[in-house]
Structure formats: C-alpha cells, structure tokens
Image (cartoon, rainbow, N blue to C red):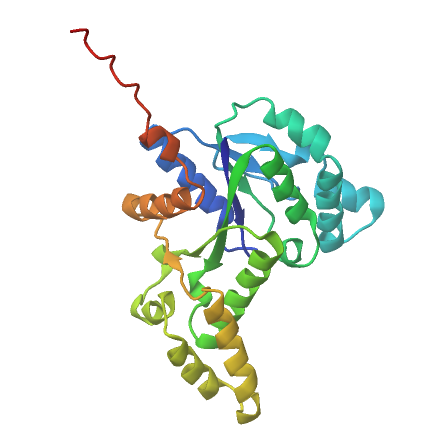
Length: 267
C-alpha cells in the first residue's frame, strides 16, 4: 500500500515551501518521501522533483498555442492530465515501490478542487493504485485577522473536502511571519458561539440567519480546527506530519508485526 499527501490551498499559501521543508525534515530523520510537481506553471523548486507534470504539459505552451489566459490554460492543463492518468501517471508511478510515500504539490487555483472533477478523478485513480490519500489544506495565517476571513477560509476548505471526499488536515501556514500570535489563538479551535457572536458584529443585522447557518455548517463538518505550522521549528513540522500520517495510517503495519508462536517443546 502506498501513501500520499495532496497539498492544496489558495495561491501564495506556501504549498511549495511546505513541500520543501517537509522533504528536508524527512532527509534529516532519514525517512523516504518523494515530492511530485502537479503545477504546470511552476518554475523553480527547492526540492528534488520526483515527477513533473510539465513533462506532460506546461502552462506556457498551452497559453501560446491555444491563446488561453492563465486560468483557462491551467484548467486545460489539468484536464489534459486527467485524460492521461492511465498513461503518463501510471508510467511514472511504476518507477516506485508499492509502499512509497508521495507528496503532490498542487496548483493554487481553488476551483480545481471545488468545481471541476479533475482532482476527484485523480484521487480515485490513486485509490485504485492502492494509495491511502490525505488532503493537506494550507491557509495563510496572515489573512486570519478577523472572523469573516476565517469563515471564508473554512468554506473554501469545506468545498474541497466535499468535492474530494478525503481526510483533511487544515494547516495555518507562515506562522513564522506572524508578529502577534495571540490574535490567531482564538481561531485555532474556536467555539461556534464565539464565531457567531463575532460574525454578527461584523455583518449587518439582516444577515443574522445567514451567519447562523454558516457557523452551523462549519461546526457540523468539524472544519473549525487548524494546526499552526512554524517552519522554523522541527517539532512543528514533526507534529503536522504525525497528524497526516495518522490520517493515512502510515506506519501502522510496520509498528505491529505478527510473530509466529514457538513450537512447543517435546516432552
């Protein structure tokens, strides 16, 4: 059985930086992982690229040849990837053992995870290849300054969770850039009543019912819990990785081994 992280989130949320730091951490602890680039618009990498979707298709080529803009071109690239799962992706996966640990560095266009079925089909393909997959959703902690932005981030993550139907680990990235961490503590694991009260203060009275429905939706799907990630601290990376490993049951078959009983001595 293989294991995979699908690293998603808005553009600029720190996905590639997370992948690079995770790779360096695993090198330090002598653990094997492989980082895969699924962004056809990517240019520079701070990690060794195990597989690169640009070998199949690149955004620059699509924009030049088809006259598409960045957003339309990216959707076209990912749909082309979807059409080549049985060919290109399988051929690349055949280069690795069945129990490998892969980290997929994905594009930042949020509609790829919430509107179009590209990544849903990508995930289903990995499952057929006997991979346990977990979504790692990164949200920039710099934008978590008020309850309205917090709810917006939760809803975007929830949309991806419903579309992909996978275990989710939600991470507040760029914690090393936060100057006043006390402002974020109330959003890490907040009470629904607190969120509703804060949201009602931000919004006009006519939105009270909408606010209540939003908070109930977020609360019912348990999407109000985020893990802060400070890439300067190895313990922070280790904790996040532990949460993800738990979601995909990584290492469970290695920790518990069945031992044959010793034959009874003949009398």
